[in-house]
Image (cartoon, rainbow, N blue to C red; front, top):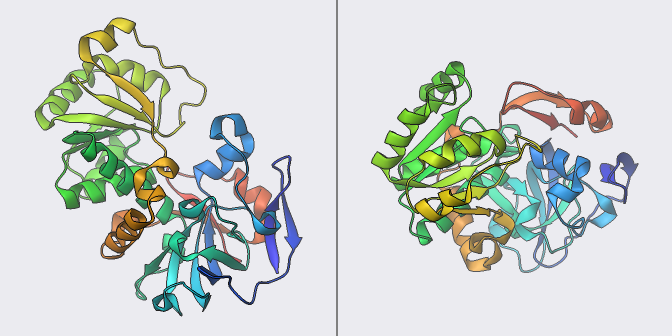
Length: 331
């Protein structure tokens, strides 16, 4: 079968590899119907020192973190309920286990990397969703456990920002979303998201007042750089900035030491790989079960920008569209 594979130098290439026919214990075979390209895929290839870490265990070096398709075989020890179901896949949920997939015609994955999708949903529209949904879920689990009452998303229009909006609303957690333009704000409001502020001149006063009123002290930061530099002085006391995304690239964050002393600020990274939700099998099972009941929320859908064949991987990786829209492989 055809597969997009990665070389030790982190270069992608199309290869012919054997198609799996018998899943190992705890694994599923999934005929892939769509594979989304996430921002992290590009970051890991272009800037491995930023993306961090070694290449995970990959059978035949097949690349890709996200996909969706239909289960065609269930290995011993995997729940039989997966048989014949369509699933969204996020390989990072079991990153220490060997995986054959996902950018190929048939993946071989641990069952805990898969979320069953209702038959009425389009697999294409969930081909990049599970990474964003699980990230938002794990983040809310962590910040609530750490005592925060409300959250702020600096990349409000991102796929993870939308997932955070859906889950915060279900849990009745106050949330503020920053948008880059009035048009982006209008789009978020059209989707039913209430507290949206445009990141433009003069927004800090409104932002500070709303954050204080809602008790929003957990900042989910997908941007970094100048945005965090500007909002940090207006944050409430005991706020924590959780660095997750890198949209600002290499732009530095510049904060005076006195700010940390006066406001007791905390700055740290957030990694869903390292969260207790993902690392604890029982918590991961509970998360997948909980998300299954609400995965049909429109805010969880993958925004498909353009479709590509597997042999068009160079064009797909170069594809840039409106913010949030993704290139999707159709094997």
